[in-house]
Length: 542
Image 1: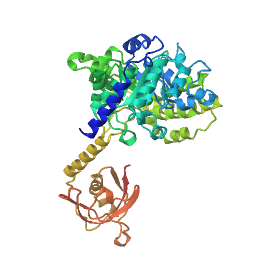
Image 2 (image 1 turned 135 degrees about the vertical axis):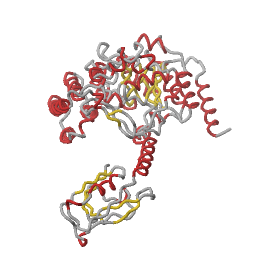
Image 3 (image 1 turned 180 degrees about the vertical axis):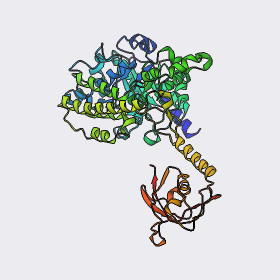
Image 4 (image 1 turned 120 degrees about the vertical axis):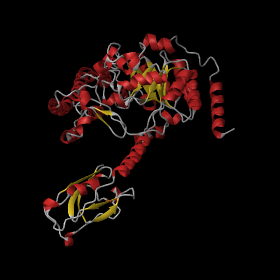
């Protein structure tokens, strides 16, 4: 038997033993579970905002509900700290039960409070403190960050199935509300499915499955594996939420179809566009179906400016609306959360407006001076709105669909910079594919027409286009001729090596002088000639 199968057999034996019925695992309270809970208490939500540290706070939840979110999780709370009832500072900062707004039945439901923990008693005590203010308690089994590794929680518990079973079952047995769990998949479908079954046996009434493994984070985030989510859905009897790869509304519809999940959970996609779920239940969503199912009219209507602006509004308007909510709440919002949200919402334009980006980063006002803090942020957002309205006016008359570009590495749509839209990191595989394609394109297009330097070099006669073409055949390189007069041989300060390649270029930006001569193109099969002593400015794109 292989080591992996031995490990799975051992783990399964532990969970099977732990799942045997006994008096300790029988719930002490009568409560709805599984699909009864999903339908009767939560209202059958399909569009779910994920738990996000310092980001799914009360103000963000209120904004999200205005734009179609049907269920929201709180930010992750550390049960080890929250269990200390004397630490009111931490408790109030993470779940304010004093002002009565968090978990309010009229404005903040349905709501699931998420904890991370590795001690069943601490987890239970913390959960009991908030169970009257929410609809369920969720156990975080998915956090992949280094702080989770250090604290031994989140995805770094996933090898201790006996402890995980006890954590979930303790809540299932002792709480008056259901327990749910959110986890990351394993490298194999088989182990992922066994893990989900164990969570169900322990008492989890909803399971949120993130289709990435623990190591997929940061620059190595990559794509989530929806096939593993589908396998989980087919293997267990409680509702399943799918998490991962959700950037646009089209992803939501496709995810529901491909995984069979009961709901779709979004984290980063919804942070950059809080209107991600907005209007998705409208009949026009049928345009995601096949042409035979949807017909041609819904497709054209769905791509109209009016419909695009429903699901991707002006980001400056969203930012100002969020600040209004922060200002009107009695519950304090962490200033770091406010700044983080504004950076994400307005990200498409901040790169084009560096002065506003700098001002936003420099805001440093005490949380106790909330009015002053909100005003400082509002001034920046109002200036951003004025500039975005200006840019939109320039493009007036051109349909938004026609202004949409395609990001070459991922193939994803990039909307005009005044609209809310997702931020996406190319996966390692996409980076590799893009790099290989660029190399191939260079090889195929690097045959440049040879040009001989004239006997008399005059600034007006220098065929600079040839030189620029030589440089711009390299990926990410821009070259601009700047010579205004002929250069003399003794003034040559730098020359490009015979084998011209991107790696041989100087740091950007820098001026270089190019000597006359033939050089091999990167492919090694074609040549070109650069003009004698022409000065150019070379800029290598980051």
